[in-house]
Every structure is written in C-alpha cells, then in structure tokens.
Image 1 (cartoon, rainbow, N blue to C red):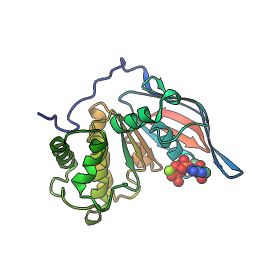
Image 2 (cartoon, protein in one colour):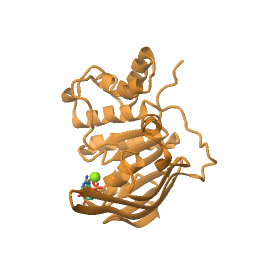
Image 3 (cartoon, rainbow, N blue to C red):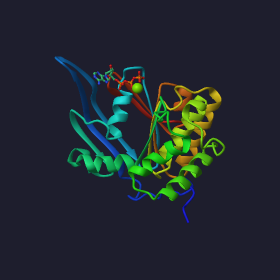
Image 4 (cartoon, helix red, strand yellow):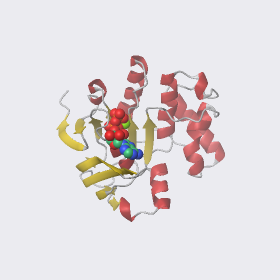
Length: 245
Ligand SMILES: Nc1ncnc2c1ncn2[C@@H]1O[C@H](COP(=O)(O)OP(=O)(O)OP(=O)(O)O)[C@@H](O)[C@H]1O
Ligand SMILES: [Mg+2]
C-alpha cells in the first residue's frame, strides 16, 4: 500500500530546535569577466524544521540567490551553509543531487514543466531519478495531481493547462517525492488571485503536515501566509520577524 501523497506527516527528527537550515556569514559574489557583483553580503539565517518562512525584498535584493543556495543549486563564495547539520561544502555532487531529489521540493515562478510531457509524466520525473518503480510512480503522480485538484487533467500537456493549473502541476511535482522541505521562488508571481489562493492553500496544508517551507515573494499578502517574514535588501537581511497577522 502506497501512502497517499502529502497526507503523511513529517515528524521532527532533531527535537525540532536544531536548525535544518543554517546560513552563517553567507556571501555570494557573481563574477562575469572582470565584473564582480556581491549579491549576498553576509547573511545569517537559521530555519528550524517545520517552520514556514517568507523571504521578501525588492527585485535584485538577492532572494533567488538565497533560494539557489538553500536548494544546493549554487554555492557560497564565503561563509557556511549547513543543511540538516551537514556543511554543504563537504558534500560531493552525488550527495547534493540526492539531497535536491529527496529532501527538497522546488517550485518556481516559471513552473519549469517539460512542455512535451503530460501532467502526470511531469510529476513522475523526480521519481524516475529517484529510482521508484514504474507502477508506483504513476500511482503516486496521479495521487499528487488529485491532491492539487487536477485529477481530471492527468493526460494534458502544460500548454493545454491554465497558468494556475500548471503551477499546481509544479506543486504536485515538488511534493510527490515527499520532501521535508519546500523551496518556492515567487510561486504565485504568474498567477491570478484564485490560483494564488489555491497554491497558498496547498502550502498551508503542507506546513500543517510538518513540512519546512521557504517562500520567496515580493508581495506582502503572500508573505503574510507565513509564520515568519525575513526581509532582504541589497544582499542583507534587514528584518526577521514573527508574523503577527
Ligand atoms: N549569474 C549572475 N551573474 C551576475 N549577477 C547576477 C547573477 N544572478 C543574479 N545576479 C545579480 O545579483 C543580484 C540578486 O539577484 P537575485 O536574482 O537573487 O534577485 P531577486 O531578489 O531574486 O530579484 P527578483 O525579485 O527580480 O527575482 C541582482 O542584482 C542580479 O543582477
Ligand atoms: Mg528572483
């Protein structure tokens, strides 16, 4: 019996006070030719398992850079990033690929779906890399799509779906591998208000089921769904507050 997708609760493994994410003095310098740009200028950020954190800030403030670091898609120029207690610098590319595949669910503003594949084939993809058996992959992909309200769109390609539906496919893909952490970069940036509400509703449910969620947005209405709001500006954290709303 396969557990229904995202109905399974993640129990804190570390007594819940040990940060699952810990950035210390994190700096990121982008270099192109002789040009250098310091996108992160000494970020300290700790996130405990099960937290729902929004990262806010104006365009160019470094939000996606933070997300890429947290998701092990890019590395720091200096400082440290500890993920689940491990210094990411000590991990090799195989370890990192495994972390990205098994522990982290990514949701991007541009959906990043493969246009030639049906909804369920898109959702199944992370499990192919994760070596899940074919029949179970299909079943889990279908369940994930049903979970996001797309049980009747399994065979449709992204081009045949609305923006909101495409983003829900992307959310289904992010959660199908049962990651403990969801990293979402402007997941509602291309959505209308109804689809935004749907996607944020899914994040609320994931949070209630114990997932750690880091949600990047420049919209305060979206950020206010999180329990904690971190504001960045010019590569630095300017405020880090519990959301009283
Ligand atoms: N590969 C790169 N090479 C050089 N500079 C870069 C690169 N990627 C990002 N930058 C610069 O780093 C800064 C931070 O970029 P980042 O994408 O993190 O911003 P952001 O907060 O996500 O902005 P937005 O809200 O527009 O998505 C920007 O000034 C950007 O121009
Ligand atoms: Mg960005």
